[in-house]
Image (cartoon, rainbow, N blue to C red; front, top):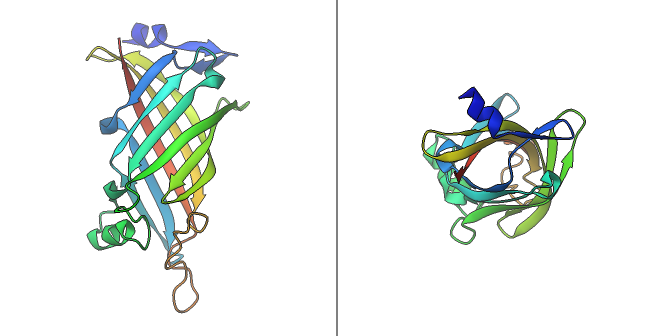
Length: 193
C-alpha cells in the first residue's frame, strides 16, 4: 500500500501535490461541518450530508479548479426543530435555493505547506468571495480501482454577509447565535484508474 501511495503523488516546488486529472467528490467520505457560538457559553454544530462536485487538477497545480454543490436541505444539527428552521425562508430557504455552490477562482501556495483556494460561495441569492485554507492529504490507489485523493480545508463566513442573521440578538440584546460560522471540510475524491 505504501508503494501505491508514493507512486501516485508528485511534488511541485518541494510540496506534495495531487496527480493531474478530474476527480469526483465522494459524498460518503466527504464531510462539511460547521459550528457557531451559541448564547456565548456553548457551540451549535452541524453538517451538510449532500455534497457533490469535481476537483480538476491541472498539470500546473496552481491552475487547478474546484466546483462543489451542497444540498441545502441536507443540513443536520441533530435537532429537527432547528434544522427545519434553518431550511425555512428565515435562513437557507431551500425551496427556492436548493444548493449552496462554490466555484474556485484561484489557488495560492503558502510557505507553511498549506494552500489557499479562493473562489465564490453562493448561499441563497448572495455570492461572495471565500478563501479556504487547505492541506493535501495524499493520493493512493484504493481497492475498488480508483485513484483517491484527500484534502482538509477550513474557512469562516459571516451569517450577516449572507443575510442569514435572523436571531443574531435576543430581546435582551445578547447574541443568540454568533455572526461568524466556522467551516471544516474533509474531502475524498476519486478518479477511475
